[in-house]
Image 1: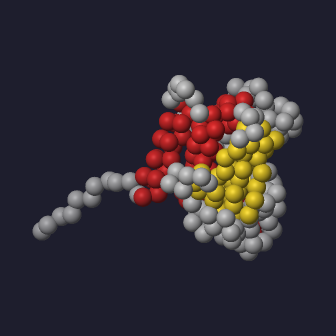
Image 2 (image 1 turned 60 degrees about the vertical axis):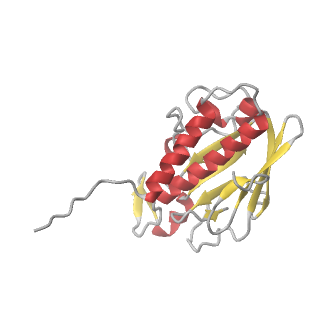
Amino acid sequence: MRTTKHTPAFTMIELVFAIVVIGIIAIVAIPRYDRDLQQEAADTVLSYIRYTQQLALKDFREQTLNRTIGGVNRSASQWQRSFWKINFESCSDGGIYIGVGSDKDYQGDTDKSEAALDPSNGLPIWWINTSACKSGGDNTVSPNIFITKKFGVSSVSGAGSCAGIKHIGFDHMGRPHVSFSGSGTPDYSSYVSTSCIYTFTMSDGSTFGITIEPETGYSYISSQNDS
């Protein structure tokens, strides 16, 4: 009788996830000489967006049962609140930082314990917007997220489906969503139907854009379609 030998292997999602993680580590950890801060900033933001999407692809958030969290019953209809998302936030001193996490307790925000960990250092990709951040945080979170200190990013704005919105999330199929943190009914009304474009302004007045396409959630540097 012939027997079949099964060889352990990575799934496609695991392989892509590993590539994204390696990309983040390479961008933030390799020393650079003759630095192009605008390109570095664009590469970093893009890597974190892709990392957020990969976390969503690996984490099926749609819940079918009610859950009791912290002694409070959270309806199954609230699972849409917990999409993995990335924020581009302003601090109390005008600095800009990146946050990545999932509101797993359905409280409407993402706390430090719910934040993703930076693959390059194992620290939370998280900060609180009522605190200062131009100096680079307090050493308990990833220093790579403070893009004002690290690259000189002075502001960020959204256009298209993300007009006036400084966050974007992804469902388990990788599709982009906005304005879902207060959802009480998961009707997919937060689904992005047209491209999101985030424009980042540097301290010298130059800008770069990141585009996130609907349906696939494919993201790229706006001036570099093959990025």
